[in-house]
Image (tube, rainbow, N blue to C red; front, side):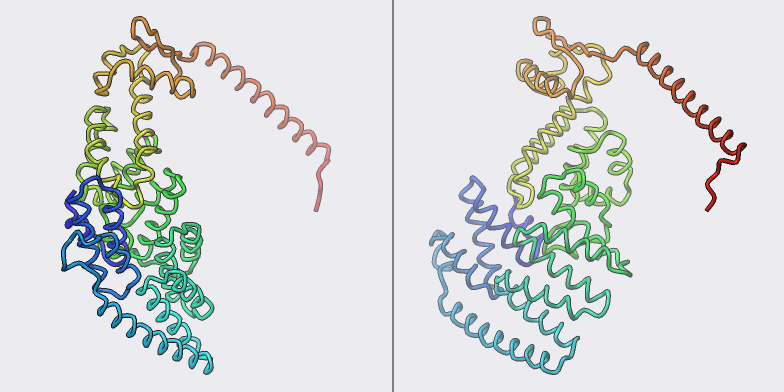
Length: 403
């Protein structure tokens, strides 16, 4: 992984959080130290001294004298922050005394921004939520919702994210495509966190490409392609994959930013499973270092693989397991075990001839199914005819309820 290129996609707190996440989860000492060095330098541009101390502890002197604890800088920043906090609180109290609604809203906003910059997310959350009572326009409500969503994502409180996305969606006159794109991304992350992959996929594939680099404090456009593409592969059927992903001109623009995800989706749809699974394996090390996706990689990969196995067996009456194992680049024994599990879960209607290594599909009796449909249609027709005759007789004898 090229940490510098990856980190350049993000700004603000998420940049630091992602670098620390890489340092904590990677298996390369060089990569860990590079991520910690970049995080240290980024933190020193802000005012979060608590996070700065944490970063110094993580480095533990391994980067030399340039990345040790700078106590003088910490004292200066803390002193300046204490003065600013006192000033902001005095101003807010003055606004409350004068009962100027717009000034109170701005005062809480400024205080929220201050606490956010200092890394006190709970206090920032409270300040942003309090601005709600002083919002007078749709624009104010949207700004409040986006601030609360940003803090809630960092706190990992995705219930709040969903609630405030809904509040913003219900606000009248929300037509700015960038705002709508931000809300869809936030909703997508909330669904991803709760393992609702189909709902997450729908939000990401519906995100406007106008998002661009306007939400890099949370998500990069490349992430929209990766998260949306993988969730869609794991949860959409073939028709949805074609209409909502492959033929979706808007989402195609995101996919162009991550060619590997674009190619694996096309390979999956074209039944080139070996190539598709190859791309997935190539992407896996980097995905396991993604702060939002790491916890879902195994589940998503398993669902994609199971869908590929089901899709492969579907058109055939019998399948040679040797040929299928070769198509999936796996052993016959491993493939047999996977297919047996899918048969037990009733996802594949088939039986396995273990001796001859052949899978036999148990297709429904088409002749019997047709007879059953005809009989059902006849019963429906009789019921509808009797109902019409009864209604006609009631009308003829004037048995009608009059209001």
